Amino acid sequence: MCYVGIAQKILSVLRAIAIFLFAQILLVASNITNILLETGWVARAVLLILLAFSVISWAMIFQKLGVFSRIHRESTQFLHIFRATRGVADPRALASAGSPFASVYAAGFRELQSQLAATNPHPGKLKSMQAVSVNMQLAAADEVRRVERGMSWMATTGSVTPFIGLFGTVWGVMDAFSGLGSAGAASLRVVAPGIAEALVTTAAGLFAAIPAVIFYNQFLHNIRDLGQRLDNFAMEVAAQIEKTYN
Image (cartoon, rainbow, N blue to C red):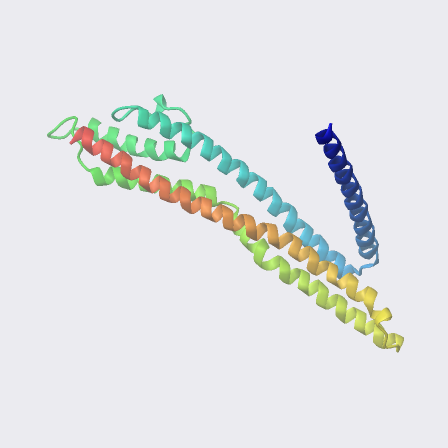
């Protein structure tokens, strides 16, 4: 009974905190809406540009999260089956054909088959191990480039949007002080609304830039890790082929 009473008190406290936070969010949203309605055309144009950057950036983020999740799932399955298979198997017999590791393996296998099928003094013998390795390295580079698509937009968003927001802020501050000169009254109450409106663009620029920078660094780490793993896998396959056919 004692634990039930403590749990009920905790739930009531959490409920009160949630209600308070929700009320604060509504208040902040109401204030921001009022500020946005009072902004000038330059600030609105800046906010629209930042919104476009943010929407595209978040679309890239969710797309990359799905891509890396799929790569991790399919590659784990492919490597498990490949390492459980003895010798050099036909890639069509292996699962997860969409994995980058499967593409690298298929490139090396195609080159191997072309050499084994070619007419030479020693049929069934490998002519050039370097050619097989080069084909796998080229396939690995293609896979890395495919995963890198869209990264430049995220880098641009992270580096440019703070300055776009700063431009809107500077313009708004200039407009506020210009209005102060026209009014002829040097008072903080006169310029405060204009400065508050101007600072919204800086906040919007940071809102667009911070997630883009965080996920860009994370995705860049994932891409480098994938490239290293593909290179190691190419060496593993080359060693297996050389052991089998030499």
